Length: 103
Image 1 (cartoon, rainbow, N blue to C red):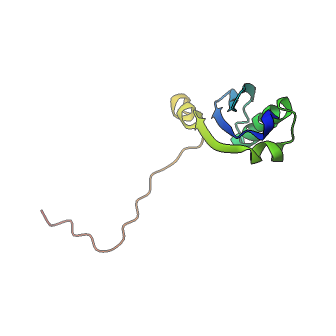
Image 2: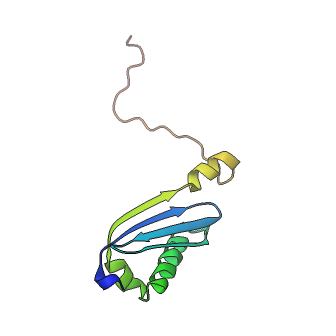
């Protein structure tokens, strides 16, 4: 596998797909797997397994070669845009004295 060259790994977790790119000294490998909205980490692992298999190695050996890792996600953006997800109520906790009469 690329003579054990170090890899830079980038992953983008989207609402539908999780994209991955691994950049080595002489090769760029790309892949795409379905996202797993209930647990986005599963999609990240599946994407890593896909690239490891394409490079002819197992996941632990593949991850040992990664020296830079970037992760991006649109999961929160999608939740805000579609207004899905759980409803949150803001809660404020004050610590210490609060003098509201000062101006």
